[in-house]
Length: 329
Ligand code: URA
Image 1 (spheres, rainbow, N blue to C red):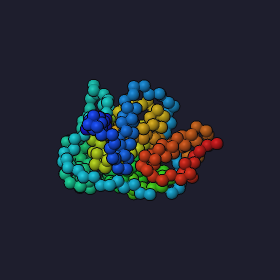
Image 2: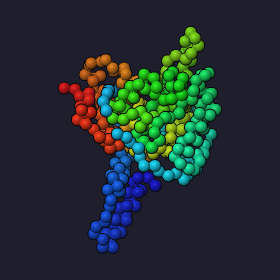
Image 3: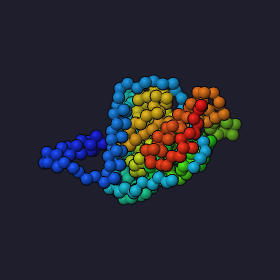
Image 4: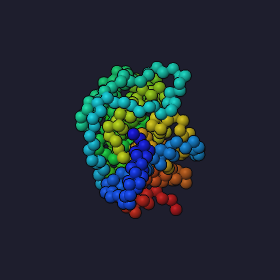
């Protein structure tokens, strides 16, 4: 049942009680908070479904400053991972797909940790993922707190990530760590994943034979890896997803939902019943560092406002100092 169907059931029940003559119902604080969240998700879903999106100027930081975000553990019973339907037109229907989709995989019933461990093994041993890694480099799976409220999703591993087998450990990762710190959290308190599990092949090699440069994943590559990030989201069930950059937006919401990051950010969207905020990719923000022009300052403030919105939804404390980061004028 999706959020809207839950709400419809609830309103039906309230109508039935009213017809029976009930005039009051007792609802505890926890249920009220859950209801509020459900309404927010339904609103975001409606926003996601609205046909006209204003195209905005494409643009993709915050820095330094100071509570944990563990959700109560949830129990899982389903043993087979049934991925939700793919978002529209990740792979155009007439486009030949050379990679296809990964072999169907089954996750064990059991604890969240057991399911996550099983998924990690599946991805790290996936023949296609391994075949796309340059010799000696690693397939990269998500890391962090699987009971977190906040899950960040980036694009694809770069040189440092494929070396260490961990997402966001290079320069962009250092900036992401500072962003997380500015939210009052440690990296270990959130979950970080990527749309793609390997570093996209460039073809170009340095004199010592190593791959140089990065490129965004192709639709074909994304389509192959999407079931893996979707399964991570399904297991973790964070309260908020943060899509870092346009590739993550395209992967999670659909490739033709938004023309630019500027159009996707600044509002709530819904991914499979979970609130999603899109913001600029740390690599893009790195390119604004040191720039003092008004547009560069606005980009940093906009990105920080996205994170403030995420903090509010995750019920993190926000100080006045934090609210003021990157404010201009
Ligand atoms: N950029 C990403 O999108 N992901 C990483 O893991 C590193 C850099």
